[in-house]
Length: 266
Image (tube, rainbow, N blue to C red):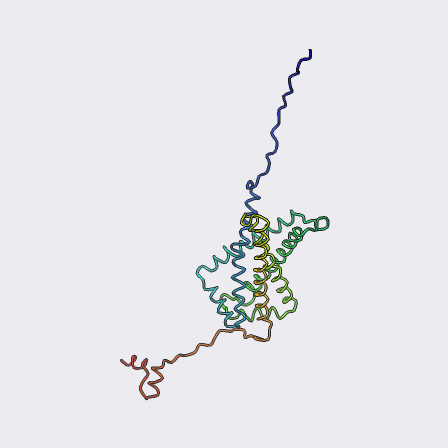
């Protein structure tokens, strides 16, 4: 009669634990990269386009907007904390993500792959453009914080070069695309738009936002190169006008001393 042999006992050696979502520094770095793309970089982009839109009102209005922004309290601390440092991190880490990823457009020509590739290339265009733009407009040439009413002429001189004009237009298209699609990715990654239907609807909203921002950006560029404000003055500071009150005018017309003079005499 056959007897049952005892089953062999196997001892499992400890292996590598599975990588779970939410663990590791890479997850935190990617989350920070995604968040900074919307807040504060995205907020700054919208504010910057709105400020540039003032150029449609002329050199004086544009200079007044530059003067207002540079008069904000702690403006240099705000500039580095919420603009320069987030841009550096978002740009450098974005390039790092791009170098580690693969799109495989040849073997997998799906829409998601095209979107992935377009997002990477528009991000590269954006970071290169922003770098030279900040260098030329913020740190080289006329110092706009001290001479805000020279801002219109400074941009106009730069856009007088056809190559720079082409760079501005291409960069505007790339930045608006990168931002609008970045918002869609942010909502999907952070669980704001769960489900295919919600993502499709939000995608239409993001596309509309990107189109509006692009129209605003191109209109601002046209303000500098169009016929309305050709050869803008180097300093568009508005002239100071003296105001005479109606009481003073009546005093002069009747031969009486103006009220200001009467107050001085008394």
